[in-house]
Amino acid sequence: MTRLALLCPSVRLLVPGALVLAVVWMAGCRPDDPGDDTTPPGATALEIDIPPFFPPMDIPPDNPTTVEGVELGRLLFWETGLSADSTQSCGSCHLPAFSFADPNPVSTGITGAQGTRNAMALVNMGWAQRFFWDGRAATLEEQVLEPIPHPDEMNLPWPEAVARLAADPDYADRFQVAFAGEAISPETVSKAIAQFLRTMVSADSKFDRWRKGQTQLSDLEFQGYEIFNREGGDPEVVQGGQFGADCFHCHGEAGLQFTDYLFHNNGLDSTFGADPGLAGMTGVALDSGRFRTPTLRNVALSPPYMHAGRFNTLEEVIDHYNSGGHPSATIDPFMKYSSGGLMLQPQQKEALLAFLHTLTDTAFASNPAFSDPH
Amino acid sequence: MRFSSRRPLLLPALVPVALMMLVLAPGCKPDPLHGGPGTLTLTADFTFGGDSVLVGRTATDAKGNALRLETFSLYLGGIELLNGTGAIRLSEAERWNAGDDNVWSYIIEPGTYDGFRLHLGVPAEFNTDTDPTIWPNDHPLGVNGSAGMFWSWNTGYIFSKFDGKADTTGGTEFLHPFAYHVGGDERLIEVRYDTPWEVNECSNHAFSLGGELLDFLVLGSDTIDVAQDNITHSADNPALADRYVAAQTAAVTLTKP
Image (cartoon, rainbow over all chains, first blue to last red):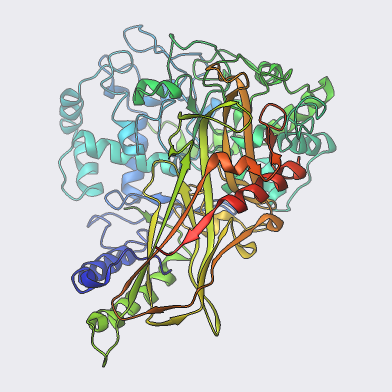
């Protein structure tokens, strides 16, 4: 690698710092190795297995994965004591059977207040980029900080949450071991839960097994895979149309993530007063109606669909894309809103649906390592 | 900075980098006994309607269509010095993105070079049948670094992406989509600077790549009309992809100021 932003007169000044940086970086390259100096003393480094064809998982240097941290994170994820009335945990809205999503369009908090967006599936979060539908959290640790004190969710102010945990001898001990004497704080709570979430890896769907050469897709499933990866539209109407579903542009299989982690307006609405999406964060009008692309892994397990759960079934989702969506100033150019939609025929839709079901990993949803330990 | 639990290429790559820095650092004085490295800075600066490239910016094309830009991204790959013994690779690939600095610097050895070259696109050895997971996530060719610029492992990377919406009446109702997404090994375009040049110790050398995006739609008498020829992803519409690449090639300039 020769890409070095060095100017010659500065080299002698920069090199020592760069060397230190390189050494530190190399030292941190394997945070899961026993004895790694980023692992808190007394904690046991845990290596997360990276499935074939998956990208590397980036681990924040200040939150290396440990056995104790993951165990603590699992307890906290399922801890109802982290809601004001001790009735809800993270797992109350992220249900395992639904790929850790909420089967309701929007979640209901402890006060009965309802959120405005669907709780996303928690699958392969270790690879995710920019969290929440509008990307307002840059890291998994940041994302975890929000639901506990949110008045429409668990409604427990952080000082009270920390006090409750500190008053529990078991939690106090666990934090002591997992974070080497760091005080219990919102940050350590979020670190522990983030560590747990990074272990929630889904890579045992039929598609995964097919990709590894361990099984075959049925003819219908393979047809659906081809439709998934073909350009949409009638070539007589849309240049380059291949009568495909055009899914791959945003849900591509690079790294087997089935999302580009970018933000798109997929034509759900023509106006965005109800929810501006990314524009609510950026203030940029061109971001109106744009939401983060969710992964399609376990999509069959995690209805309802779209940011506010407006579609109950995958059939409805396919019909939406087949329609081309509602034109607007910010609709994605790939939506076939101006050319009559995708024009998928019923048999093609059936094939596409069959392919989407190959992304289901039931072992993930029922993995006892992710279940409520309380 | 983040660390990776599986980084097959970066770790081995850092060792020679660190060693090279150790070797080069003492020699960075303009001292004939030790020699010293020079630097090469590549700046890529494109325009859209004469202004800097910004998402949401509008411009009018040669056919009178009003275009609103939503994406312009481009791979600059196989960046190499040329000398009598062949090519010295400085980078596998960089990614040009609107809003980024789009300036890259490299350490280069003193000497005489026959030229400098880069490619618009990703070199074949890194393109098709290559799994992006072999790269660190934030590498331009990695899963995250290539976000939105990768088709699939067997079809490779999108070399250049220029898309948005148009008002084909020249007005401000931007509802007509256009998308020129080109890729494929056969569309890898070499851009060269073929004048010999000397690199002295501690000297800085700048190269500048540029072009006007609206010119990517015009080559001589052949003008791509977004009203008619508005979508290509290369394999689905290779003729339009070829026209676009030809115009892009002619419109891009590489200079050594």
